[in-house]
Image 1 (cartoon, rainbow, N blue to C red):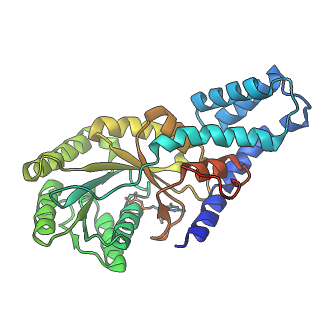
Image 2 (image 1 turned 90 degrees about the horizontal axis):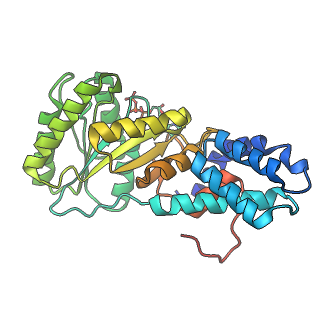
Length: 316
Ligand SMILES: Nc1nc2c(ncn2[C@@H]2O[C@H](COP(=O)(O)OP(=O)(O)OP(=O)(O)O)[C@@H](O)[C@H]2O)c(=O)[nH]1
């Protein structure tokens, strides 16, 4: 997808989030000066927009420092919101790189069912193919035949090999086979789907631990990445999933999906603030092109609904 189309998609995707922020702030801009009550209300509006209490508090402090008892304008406030969000997102905006030697780099993808895990695996595979890497998938969610079938369909669509096993089969054994095949055929990146049965935490933990043990016997560095896929539409629930999955699987980075069309995009900022885990990419649609590493400044402006950055100004 071209940069411009992606930009439009990103801004469009975050419109409901920025509209919600706008709705939460509405009424405040009829005031003429920024007094203490208004500051309190702005802070509350930011918290109920899912941005997280720490970021909301910092935005309040900055407004208090820069604008207290001065004129209140919406564009100015949104700009401060965008600046502070960018400061939170910049350190965590970290694309997933293929840099493991020896190959293959093994990426375990974890997350609850329905979070967008399968689609994200397909999108990542597509992204790596575009970068000329050899990609293979492993259908490690052996718990559900539907999950295996769905991943197979994606593998065919994007044209990458896939290792599958029977429903109910041993996931660790399948992963072992997949690594062997990937190594033998010179694959750069092996992306492994896993079960998302958070309702049975003990079993899931045991299964993921077994996969890790098996991988470690082939290469002590593997898995190189453990990527947790989160559904932004679940709002604050996404934050508790990070806590649980960190405990069961040792998460190394996040992908947040379904940021298009949700009003809860602010949760991305809360996640960055609270956990400081790398956020590799965001999903803003169902197609294989709809996943991209993000530009923290551009995303911050989209969430805040701030004016575009003036041309020529560097971002990072
Ligand atoms: N709008 C939107 N939909 C998405 C995105 N990512 C995934 N989806 C949709 O969300 C639904 C669930 O995605 P899956 O990839 O099947 O999720 P999963 O976690 O593998 O779920 P199971 O198949 O139940 O294990 C599908 O209808 C996807 O098309 C996204 O970024 N935006």
